[in-house]
Every structure is written in C-alpha cells, then in structure tokens.
Length: 149
Image (cartoon, rainbow, N blue to C red; front, top):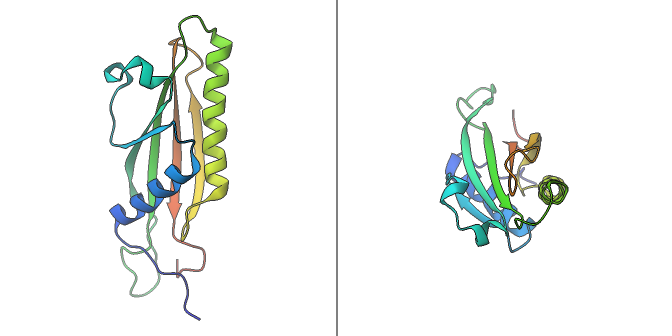
C-alpha cells in the first residue's frame, strides 16, 4: 500500500485548506483569499462575518535525502472581521467573536484531508472597536506524519 500523496505546491496546499474551511464554517461566513480591511466592507455583510485567508510562508522542510525543499509546513493566517448591530452590547460582540473562535476550533478538529492541521494561536479584538469585532487565527498546515519528514 502506498502512503499518502504528498502535495508540494503552496497554492495546492492553500486550495485544500480553503476547501476544508468552506466545508466546515457556516454558509453565511464569507471566505476570501487575500486581505480587505473591514472599513472597506459593507456593514450589513459584516454581520455574516468575513474570513480573509492569507499565506504567511512555508518552512520546516523535510531533511530526508532527496527531499530538499519538499514537504514544507505552510503557515496560514486568517484575519476575520464581523459586526454586531449598534444596539448590541460589548458582551454580545464578545459572544459573536467566541462563536467564530469555536467555529475555527471545530474546523481544526475536522482537519484537512492529507495534512496535519494545527491551530497555533487565536487572538480576539477584546471588543475594542464595538460594534466591529475581529479575530486572527494562526494555522500550520503540515505534511502528514506518515511522510518522510
């Protein structure tokens, strides 16, 4: 039996990550490649929440013979923006951010087929910009443990 197919290209790894993210998050969440500041978003759309998918680079390559610059770990950053209604409180904004955080944690547990997915860090806005909220999630998309890494 052959081991898992190793995906080498960064864009192919990101495509697998984004497909799994879309399948995991609620349909109302808007997932986009690249970064758009929340100030350039429509307030009504921000009620659904945006997830900007950014590539932070690749590293930690395999050291096995003949595997130079292969089986690297892709670092992915999600910058998420959301909004609550003006009349809602800071506590309600906090809950909206926690809901988003829990969705990202569930995505991590579901994983990305063919990869080891690690949620490294998750930062929330602390409700500093009510009614706007945000979260930043740092992920590592690693080659499967069965690889030669």
